[in-house]
Length: 175
Image 1 (tube, rainbow, N blue to C red):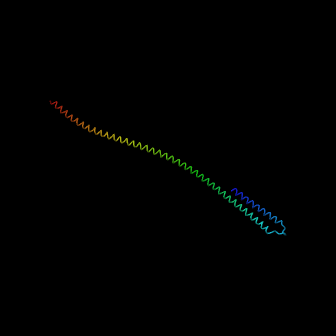
Image 2: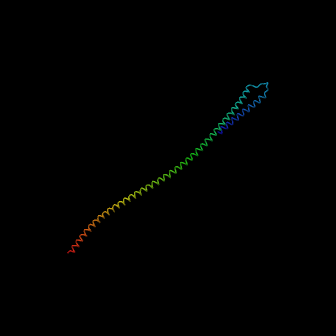
Image 3: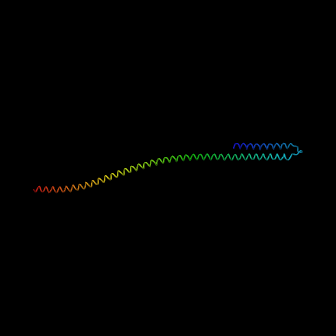
């Protein structure tokens, strides 16, 4: 862009030089005595020099205007790029934060899973303990039933012995 601006400045300078030459030619034409007449070709050359001077200056002004537009567009593009970089950096921070949260969540889930496994093991142990208690209670119940049956049997036998002892006591007294 600097090179193009320099070229536009040179074109502007050349336009100024053409105008200066045309102005000098007009001055010189003015010095020619009216009696000699001014050649038509000379007048045409001066007019053409002025026209080309104006064209060159106009082209230089257009180029400089375009360069200004390009410069503003570049500044806008740079601002947009900086904004994009800033947003990308913010997105990266959010992604990192999200990644950290997911890692913490994964650790918490792993810990919860281990706790659930531990609870399941304890529950199985409690279930096994309850089964053993039930078995022991069943055995106590059976032993109690056997004791009741044995006690009834002993009571029956004691009654029988009591009857036998009474008869024996009657028999001994009677004899």
